[in-house]
Length: 224
Image 1 (cartoon, helix red, strand yellow):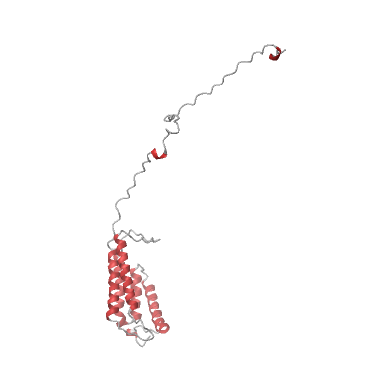
Image 2 (image 1 turned 60 degrees about the vertical axis):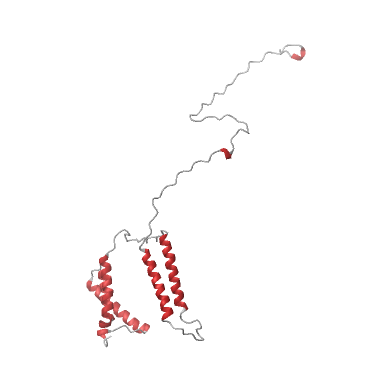
């Protein structure tokens, strides 16, 4: 029987409490526990020195300006100056009721715009601005210029300019078309000659009939 303490008996003994101990957490290497500091002693954000940023990566020397572009700037400025000079010296002051402004303002405005474009272009080149190279699908941009092809094309145009009044457009145009095809590497001589003659005749009659412009007939005058 259980003895109750309220009836003068003694309380039965209780079993001893089992002590459970929590195993200590091993400290990680390199991690140090900071002691708990009072609120006043804790460092504020302003006291923490800023982190040192990574050094800037040097991209190398600044790109040098393309001096060849200054030739384009000079050409634009020269054309603008010539247009203004021609407008102020050769064009008269023809003013009537239908045109109260006259023919001078438009070429002068164009010349001034050319000068402004040349100045802006030159400033951009001086600051290192370069145009983006055109990406060709079948063109190697790093290959050198084929001067043989360029000179052959220039020769074909010059021959056409010299012979167009003497031999006529049909013959000089045939030489131009055939010579251009040869300069570009086409070696089908007979086929190219037939195509060149056809193109010359088509352009001759297109200008004469469609546009009312008579191209020189030369030695074929009266035949065409």
